[in-house]
Amino acid sequence: MAQAADKPLAGITLNLASMNDQFSAVLAQIAPEFKEATGAEIKVDIMDYGSLLTKTTADFVAHTAGYDLITMDIVWAGQFAANGYTIDLNDLMKRDAKELDAADIYPKLTEALGNYKGKQVAYPFAGYANVLAYRKDLFDAAGLKAPETMEDLVAAAYKLTDPAKKQYGFVANGQKGPAVAQDWMQYNAEMGGAILDKDGKPALNSEANIKSLTVYRDLFKKAAPPGAADYDWGGREESFRQGIAATMQTWSVGAPGYYDPKTSKVVGKVDVALAPRGKGLPKIYGIGGWGLAINADAKDKQKEAAWTFIKWVTSPKIQKEMNMLGAGSYIRKSTVTDKELNAKYPFLPVLNEVFENGDGDYRPRIPEYPEIQDILGTAVNSVLVGTVEPKAALDAAQEAATKLF
Image (cartoon, rainbow, N blue to C red; front, top):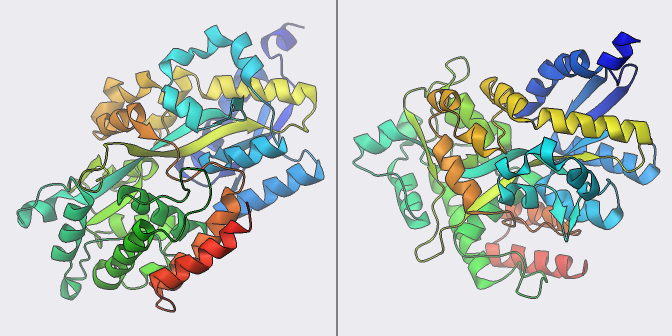
């Protein structure tokens, strides 16, 4: 009886579908701690982006409840809300407000990583800041400052490219599908483009978007490593860690790896700065990341246990532990400003600036987003590999996207 009281969730197993970002291995590593505290076992199923979306969507549609918990990408919020895939957490958040210490969580992350038109379809779990990682040693040697505008970044990328030295000024995702769609959307926003117009309708072939895609293509042709048109997030990050690329806009989750000599050849040579914006554009920065969602088809006892896990894993203590282990996933002000974490990861003040002044809609969080991403993932890659010009690619993409609305 004493054991049952100490471990109220004994006998329960929670299946968690996780994206294979840095936090996933840490989740698996700390899962036994949750079992020790509550008695519930956490099974972490780690998948790549495409598999995660496909498998969890199939689970939702078939109402099979194979997963109790799901890591939800920021851009899936509209789709989850429109289809009722996961439970609305608002009532639970109100019930347990004191325990959650929500005032310590950046408000923009609570909104971006799970809230869609008032429904809290996921709880913020892993906040990412869109940042610029750059080779400070190469910039210093060339007499360059950290880029403050997109124009600065483009000029520096060309200047620091020297194929004879296997040194390239720029790297980004080029792989057909979500990888290139997501990276181009971030550059597009920073150059003044937008995916939707003021009425929320597709505006893929606007003049600003065509211009930004032309700049993006030219960077791939003249300043990126050979084969970059096939890079996804892993290939892009590896090229930077191996010292091949001088600049890379990225999500902050990867930044801990630049400071780890086990994985990085640029330790002591790299810095992380705010992502540049086009001249004259307001200083807002991209927010990305993941929430934790509870499957609407799960049984009631599973839902309550899953909520207990969410409260535990997002608590100040566990958030710090995860990030000391390299999860690179932040939601709490107290974690971002923690002295021990700042001593280990000196880029955290940049995250604070982004999370305070961020934009969670660089990629529109609408129900139609997955289809728009697929359309752009094909169009942008076709431009990078040289089979079509930017205007023609975006004209065709606009025609396809318009049919969704």
